Amino acid sequence: MNITEKKAFKDRRKTPSGSRELRVVIFLGLICLAVFTPDNLREIVHQTLADAYIQVTTFVAFTLFLFYTAEHIFKLDTNYLLEKYERYQVPIAALMGALPGCGGAIIVITQYVTGRLGFGAVVAVLTSTMGDAAFLLLAQEPTTALKVYAICLSVGTISGYLVTLIHGKDFLKHKVDTKPHFLHTFEPDPHLWLLHTPWLLLIIPGFILGIGTAFQVDTNLWFGSFSNLDPTKWIGMVGALVCVGIWTTAKNAGPSMTNLSGKLTETHGLKIHLERVMIDTNFVTVWVIMAFLAYELGMHFSGFDLAGFFAVWAPLTPLIAVLIGFVPGCGPQIVVTTLYLTGIVPFSAQIGNAISNDGDALFPAIALAPRAAILATAYTSVPALITAYGYYFLFES
Image 1: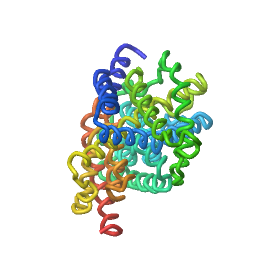
Image 2: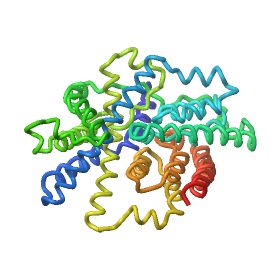
Image 3: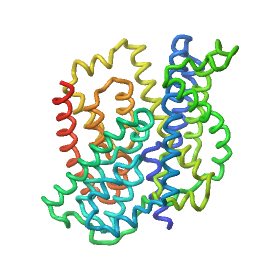
Image 4: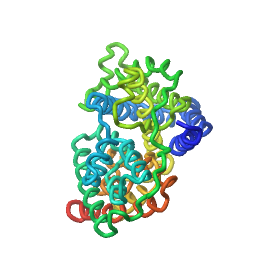
């Protein structure tokens, strides 16, 4: 990787993850809320942190571990697939976009920039991708996640072919072979491995507690005489703060966004495998905590019934979710998915956001092919609105 590529990569990492200073402010803010607030408010913060960790973080980590293990075992080389089966580039691009996370979508964007793919493939991948919110949905409601993946994959493929049919295969196609700046080899943090053990010591029992909680079991009773101390809450709260703390200090603060070829774990083994899981889990956790706290504290201070608001203004909910999908990055999309999982917004809103959002793939697209990025994003809004409102009027109105 040359100097220019390293600079581009460095700038790219700051975009979705935030600057180090902002991350420090977020972490210290959570510490202050958890320690220095009045008793009633402090209890809300403690329980919110615990719920985010036990009910979401642990399952996201488990899902990521399974997903990255599959990458490694099957040695998925997406660059090879795109080059070998050029005539099927639209459905392959849609399939890569439907994969949880943003890595597959970023690969398609870089292949487009180098002139190997057409604009239809870009529309297909940006329509089908759900970004890191996919991990959250898969961890919490796997059956629903599969339905959303199927919808996004189908809509993405159809949209890609329609765009190719309308504009032709050479529309906005790059003619000059330029090096992709945003597809990179994951660079392990030499200091982060020291945190693997405490992170695992919390995530493993947290996952067990999460399973118990999912089955409506009072997990505090598992601790015998210590049950009156509410140990589940304390484990969850500490685990959440550890995740945010690692996210604050780590060099790789955002999703790892590596090639899905499995070469990384094949070369470096379990240590890097765990680091990828930890980094991506922490990134998702931060946004889930923000969403949980915004909701709980908002309800506490205002008494405003957000669920009631969306119920009254239900016809506008899919539109709002689609518009949020235009915001680059995975964070806002994780918030929408969190609102769906907590029953605040309907499934039609989740569908609309899943189709319209481009995740972190929009960052390299804007940087390397701004015209194509803007036009593709505008095109994704059409199937997003049609699908979301189609579902709304058929099943929810």
